Amino acid sequence: GEEHYNCISALHKSMRGSDENASLYWLARMLEGGEDPLYVARRLVRFASEDIGLADPLALTQAVAAYQGCHFIGMPECEVILAQCVVYFARAPKSIAVYKAYSNVKECLRTHTGPLPPVPLHLRNAPTRLMKNLGYGKGYKYNPMYKEPVEQDYLPEELKGTDFFKERKT
Image 1 (tube, rainbow, N blue to C red):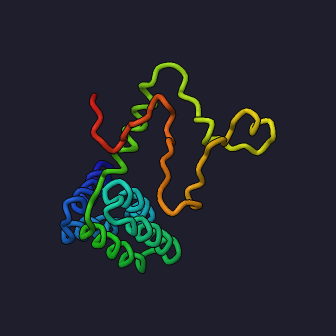
Image 2 (cartoon, rainbow, N blue to C red; image 1 turned 135 degrees about the horizontal axis):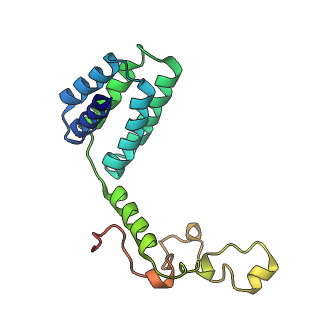
Image 3 (spheres, rainbow, N blue to C red; image 1 turned 30 degrees about the vertical axis):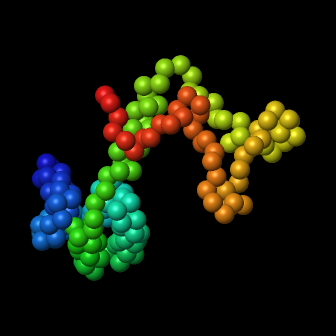
């Protein structure tokens, strides 16, 4: 019932708050109460990107490994795998920069009026002669061929200069 959602919320908030003891408590309460360990593992995968993100990019690897470990061996042996992951997440630095930036991109798309801007010609693939003749891919600078990053626009003209990582005005 509702306690299922209350406990997963408490686990998330404890990890967010970097409280490893509370995180372990809520995890154990769920597992000892019969919660599906794969449900917890799936929630940890989401947490890794949503709450830790780029502050520790290895968090996602930890979460996926925990999910796979739980899938391979099941309960009760997988409880220590989940416990390790939960403590790792509680101790990890946190960043919601990517989560917020992606939300800003979605908001930009939802509030756009009219047709969406076309993909700039230089970013389009040109697998045929006709597409090349139409200018697809013309002027594209293939970054690996340069020692330094190249100056090149990647957003449509209408969005030039947009920074989705900055707070958007509502």
